[in-house]
Image (cartoon, rainbow, N blue to C red):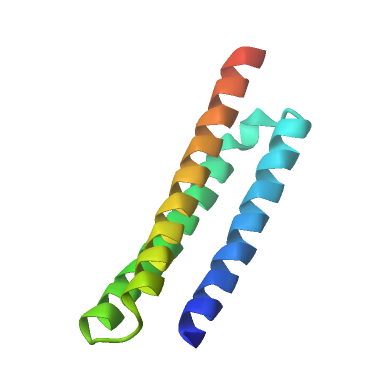
Length: 98
């Protein structure tokens, strides 16, 4: 559905921006910017959660096909997991380099 495509495009842009920031932080070893990375992570989580709740409302009103809805929800969850694991990796790198 069109709204799913728009949502996923938004998530792709925000996630790409997050990972570019994270790579810059790690590459230049600017671990003092870790709080900003956490803020970006929380903003991305809020975006994902908003899309998830909106999608649940649409599912309840009977929109979409079951298989597509499941894949969409799994994609949102896995994106959240990927961001979480990446932040944990950067935190571990910070500890390693200290």
